[in-house]
Image (cartoon, rainbow over all chains, first blue to last red; front, side):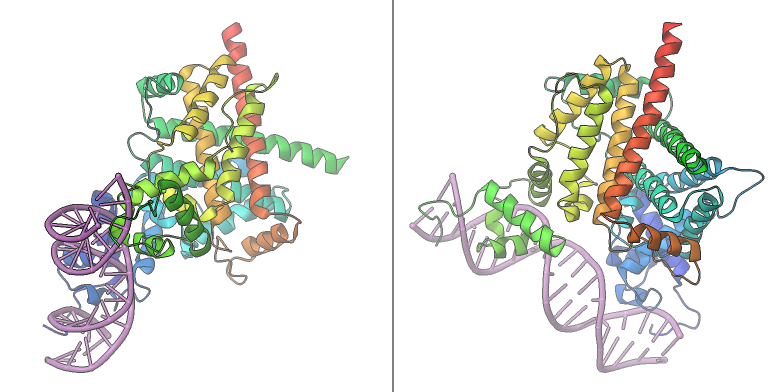
Length: 212
Length: 212
DNA sequence: ACCTGAACACCGTTCAAGT
DNA sequence: ACCTGAACACCGTTCAAGT
């Protein structure tokens, strides 16, 4: 075959195929990806020069595309924006839970994702956080969202709950499971609300102390 | 050589060596592990029947050993216990940051770690949380600790902060870095405090509503 | 420019063979 | 019981060769 008249591959096609693969198989390898695309593994490197980690970073962008806020709306305060930001991020990840473990070991370099981080910092600073605290708040939200995303994609049972040896844990797991809706989503909402309430209190008392 | 008079290997020796390897190299493979132990790769499977994932779960136990609370002390309330639990967990992981990404994809089955989850549920229920809420609180803390542990072990820079394109993010990163102490630890403390304060408020108003 | 096959240096795991 | 070497079915990546 050698060079075809019109390209068989493109970065976009490769990313789409890798996401499909990850969604159904839980992971991807370059050979499998090539097979899914009807192409030889070495061909991939013409479109994805950074190899496997390049694909992984592309996956981050694909999964987050259009789901993360990058500016304030109306009279949204920092808490409302942070809520929207965290829900967007977590929602994107939870829709493709198996990609999360692939992302955790890699520096964020996708421009769109970074733009939403930039927007979050801007909103926080505008609403009275100093630079260092704003960064900590961003990092706190980032940690919780990432942890929640892992939770959303975790094996059916996160804990090996043995009724004999861990009766209270088992009971609690069963109680939470018997509630309607997605357990992991409910956990996320409880945590996000608590986190923001706690941060808000700290921010207010900090601002009050400064004003005094 | 074949069978030696006294065993060359043991589960403990394998786990210790794998932790060393992960700490210095950031990862481990069965062949490298065998080489470090002066043994052939196939020998490992006699002591670690579950193969690589068995080693990984052993790593969780080794890292957490003796660092997670499994009972209340004095008149500790749930918040104090949860704080101790989260600090112990995060401290264990932060001491060996490279193991964290290995653990995130696997169900927790280490008995000691599970015992501390059991203890946390017990304390929460004793202090008035219903079973389902207690499980959510545990999961929230788990998410945040895991995210924070990933943060602690993340590449020197989590975000590719380009001063030109993301000036506010860069400024905030520099401001946080210029503060004394460990950035990731400070982030964790801010988040843990905020989270527990928020959970406490929700718990109190829930308890008040029940009492009315 | 774009695709290929062959090649390289790895993986994790199994298993018959040795003592 | 415990260790070995050989073997199997994989990896990610490079690169000369083709059009």
